[in-house]
Image (cartoon, rainbow over all chains, first blue to last red; front, side, top):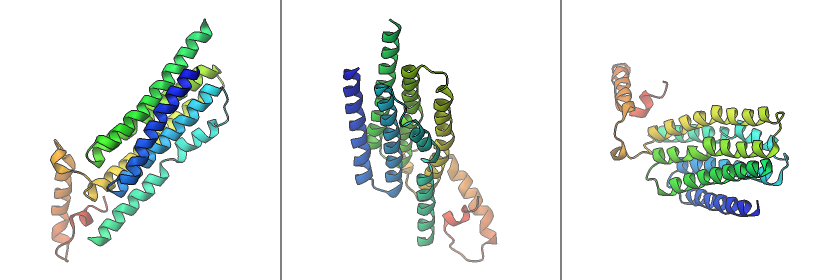
Length: 89
Length: 136
């Protein structure tokens, strides 16, 4: 199980690094929002992997809460982007 | 024996979910515009989360836990399309896509038709095309 822990940690770290790189570089605000959504999904996956490997259920409520409210941020930013571009013409 | 089988299932599910996350990150880095990046971004949100939850279920093996895991996944399935729809809508209207990469743009005809229908009513000339489709 230790080998699996190391493999999953490395893969998730690489994925998070890629998402963070897109957040920093992202040419537009919507690209950054999308990358933040992916980063949140990777965090949720890391929480779930932690629970599965260590055999506890400490973060389960947090995982459910993330899946319920995680979409509000990107919706808010999407509305903001639309309105700002419209007023600028 | 049974323990080993379940351990293998947990390991496969965890590595599969992690690979989904990595695929999304690679897609975010490599794909050229917002729409194709949105395609890549859904992998860890749906299939990746399913694999991780399956790993938890295979590790715990308790029927009481199953409804909670199913609820987490159902809520993710309900909320992900909402945010994807809003991001795609905002991206289309603010021209965050590269038209030359599209094979077919079905929304373009709809937008043009709506603009033509609205044009005779507009007293102020030169209204932006986005403004005409704002209230749909």
